[in-house]
Image (cartoon, rainbow, N blue to C red; front, side, top):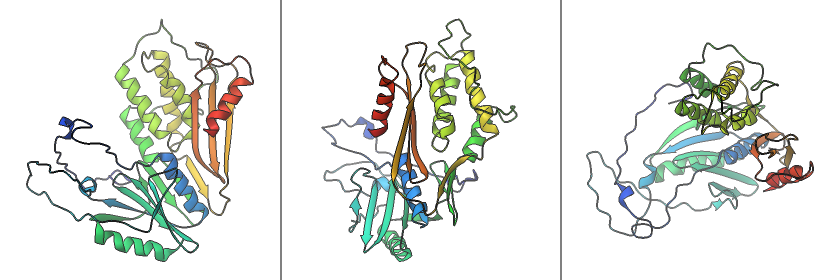
Length: 331
């Protein structure tokens, strides 16, 4: 689907029943490059700061582009095709993010971010971009998708002033999925007097539906830090959800209905210094007295990561949870 929800192509996949194989006997290390959402946001922030455009391509039949040393016999089906297996040179791999590849030419850089068979790339020099876009189709069968506008459910709008990331389409689909399109809007994701506990005397609700709502909301957090704490709090009760917990989740959906257009703004021309912030609550969870840490990181003026997590131990002072939060912020 594209960013408007329109079906642009259909796919079929032929598998060789690799699930019958045993690790260490039939294969050793296997993996695909999967960029973290934080890494993608960092690249978007860098592109906005350094004022260059990002583009997108899709590698067709990505998992067929690898060498194998052993003879493997499978039953071919009609339409099976073989591809050339190229080798790329001139790129250095990220020391921290192994899914990021960088090519330097004088003071200019070309950035290539890989998520399995989807690739985001851009350069501070337009000629580097053109060279890369010209060479890759000669080596792999790819689909050039133009400027980056939609990636992993994230809608990306690149303007002359910066980059705006949002998930308004995903948000609308979420409301439709859980029959909340006609719900009344809420001003905040959680009521100020809301207190959630196990509610052992409460009425049980459909566990599968509740977990589905939490899982869907957790992906929406990719561009919505404003609902992070509320969603993570409700997620603590997914093993035995009650009506009070479902009411809290629906409150988040009501808030989303009135804020579908919210997202992240990465402005042009800001510095790229990394700053981290942390905090901890005071009262903590009334069930086990553990505090909750909140952290965020900004690359210049661009928010690239954020977390809300219950601490693993019970703090014995008001200072201790602050240190724990700082430690998780720096980890």
